[in-house]
Length: 132
Image 1: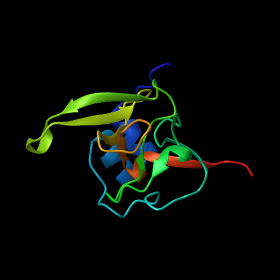
Image 2: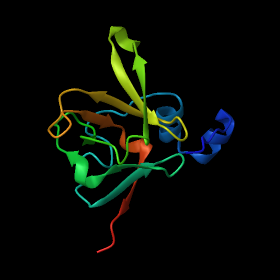
Image 3: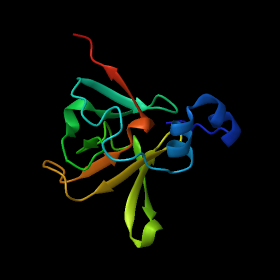
């Protein structure tokens, strides 16, 4: 996969303010406010910054945490993981592997088959529904 890099001022022009704050600066949307938190539409969730496919709706589950949650990405190469020591704790941040957009975090308390919960900001995603 070819990396996509742009200066911050270009991202600021291309994204909404909320998307820029979350995807490029690492902010987090308030729980239960994201447009995809309760969505059950079949399809593929793509990166809001670079349109890379990230999560299949078939891997989405209701975790009750207030953010869209998935038990796995569409592929092992779609997501990059980084140690995050902010807020006095250790978490694993997940980013788009192609453009380095901040997506959210992954936790080891999800359902089988992976046991993982990818807790993702809606603003970092664009859902492309499946054709019927």
